[in-house]
Length: 327
Ligand SMILES: Nc1ncnc2c1ncn2[C@@H]1O[C@H](COP(=O)(O)OP(=O)(O)OP(=O)(O)O)[C@@H](O)[C@H]1O
Image (tube, rainbow, N blue to C red; front, side, top):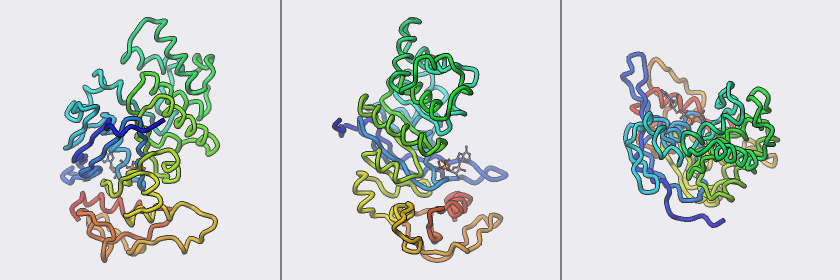
């Protein structure tokens, strides 16, 4: 399928700040002035280390959470100002659906598979009992689950089967945009690849747009047309998957690519960003003690990054977050 260049979602100056600290006077900049475009039928991969703000951005774009500031346009309609609590009941909810990370947690244990898929169809699409039933069965077919599984409860399903139910529930209403928040990270490796293939097939068949959140650049590279790399709440690199992967321009992207395990390469050969991993972080001081020059040109980041390994930069992210962007 040819990917259209018509934008489906346009995001401008989007920020999400959370009040933190005992007196909740400090602000944690989870998402910081993000600009993005997702084309019709395009798969955009959002990657970055744990804690960099991927899920928060995904939840804001899916309109589950309100942005602090910024614009979100869907098919030319500004949806960022609609409070999240009202969005669920609006007709626009049908256009943006979400597949969550943990299929067990995202399914109501008291609902059968049939009920889980029928519920959003009744609320967002409507129709007779027979219409709803036909749509549920079609969704089960689409995700490769036998129709008789409709009468099962979540505890009677494997992890992969639960993931398929989560996908069936989201695609049944025929959304324009599917937000996938680490949809395979809770699954066994063998099941992960089956689910990724299923997602790729569904996207081709239906021409949906995907926002695919992952910490795994390798997975994103295979599935997505474009990649956005997030670091400390900001998008530091954005472009076609091939060029981001083969000609990364940002040091953080280069380090992420180098952190992908490669049996041909010794860990010593990997890119290390300047800084000292052994520098102490004192949360009581509310400041980052990494000294030196930051290789990443971010206004909120004035200090150095520790050497980045496949374990990532979580501690540094946590350190910067505690400062609320005001080191
Ligand atoms: N409701 C909240 N209140 C306060 N802080 C929050 C809230 N939700 C997220 N955060 C903080 O915002 C930052 C970004 O979190 P987020 O879950 O978006 O990161 P992430 O990149 O998705 O991480 P992971 O890959 O581990 O899921 C973290 O420091 C997190 O603790």
